[in-house]
Length: 500
Ligand code: 6LW
Picture (cartoon, rainbow, N blue to C red):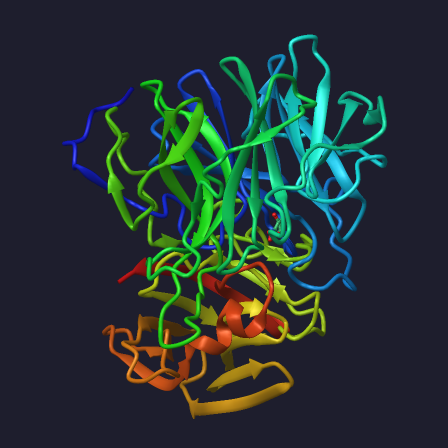
């Protein structure tokens, strides 16, 4: 355990900001590992590590080669990789997930969560989404899925060892019982689920039984967590996974959103990973306060991982935080071709296309700025803020000019343009929350511009952020910011991302 940090009495929540939905966590000794869904992005399934449940470092992405992850071009955004479950059993890490774009449910294993992870073990007989893994005392491996049904499998072959049977339908009348997780704790097997749908009505409910196959008795206090119809700053709370802390206390990792602006309130960072304390009353979990600042746990916190603002692209591989749309062919995206630069070759597709040549990182702060030094002498490209093919804003450099474009649904427009000296230019975007003037304002403003060598930032266009929000665009993801190529070859010397 490294040098202790003066203990502040609260910690920030979300513990993993930005679009990191459907978190699943497992503990191995003093180490915690966590994964999230990743939808149309490649590489897929980010893997995080922590020793205090509060400070998380991304180790890599579990699915980082085409043999593991196929995201067909005709698959819509927000399809692809849905909610995963991560467990450790028999000295191995097991990852079960649904690729709704290709192949359905599948299993991956690894001895080291940093990777490499295996190629997929397909699970043709496992229906639905949100698969969970649990082993009982006699070693039977149970898979439980949304809707809430369950079947035994051989995890080494993927073979089903029995028919699927319904376990529980959740709270009568509640929408979409999903995201099941099964745990043996004390005398009981607990079945934790999400209900209400992943929007404002989201919640967490639990049932318990004496065997992994039930029968399950619902908790009289269900839902044990929901922020529906409240004025809480964190909304859509649900899709949780239970874990024990270093001191034996219990915690939930779960998803939530931070909407802003007037009505209906728009969230732009996607569903983020939050932490909430759990206590036990009469053998039932009781969830404590889930707020943007929560009481710090009793154990010493690790030093916050230092994330440099600048990526210089001087490594042979991109850092795992950089993700691309559906694929990242090495021939189109490389840091080796022009050492110290990221080179993107446009493949005739713009950001409107499913195979856009784009490399981005998740926006993780409500107020932030991004900058990149781009050399457009061999093509056109720039810096984009992407939610999906139909919702993105970008500032694009071509020989001697810079242009700001906006795509909102069927509408694409050139918002502003200005001549610039030929050669490399620093493009940027500042993102700042907006205080709602009236019901229709907010949640933020995106200012696109160019930065002079002396740091002066000249804004070419200010664009309203709600059109790049989930409430407008729909879907399951959040904003991703980064370089893209529109035509020819474009070279990026560095890319900065800072919270403000
Ligand atoms: C996830 C499911 C869900 O698999 O959305 O709305 C899916 N709830 O639990 C994608 O996040």
